[in-house]
Image (cartoon, rainbow, N blue to C red; front, side, top):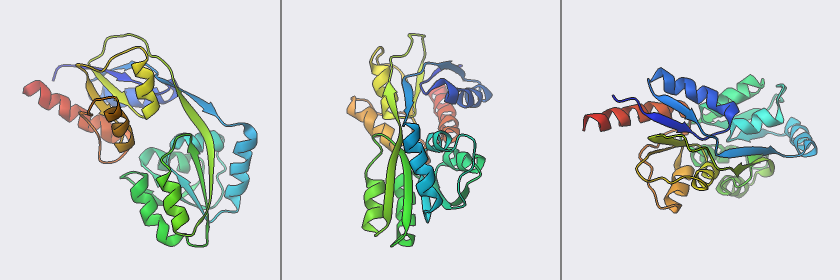
Length: 232
């Protein structure tokens, strides 16, 4: 397989883990951040911590939500429903208890959780622009939902280093990329369906999208795709 240069478009603090996964598969990572993360005020994060302590469930769809809200650990002893391996790992690192894990996106996990939350309180710390169906499903199941925005991602234009492949982990990263670069003639890899839909809105189809929304799965199938492509 010809070694490909792969743009990693997430924030620098997240890029190191993805770099390691790419290097292990003999791919060359090029860190080109396309987003910046803006955390909610500390008063909002305090509200999430306080509300979570008395909740029946905590819904986690992003590892970043955990790391911003409980940066030193100390998640309460409350059952957590977590989407994806990275979110589950962040919960465990914060001393939380993953009671339900999903690997096919927020919709699948929320549907499994819904029958268990009638009359119960669910705290959902989330990013700005999160798909509203998660909240809607829980509310239709008669859960008392506290959905609190704990961060937002803002697009930023990346550098112009040459690459053959680009990995997008969020719709915001696609917007940031498009501020200074095009997508023609690139292999396009996305973390999940939501980001794939955002790419389609820009007029492009993802070449690589994993069955579960985590970077381990994404890099694995990206390697397979590039190998098959080089043999074609």
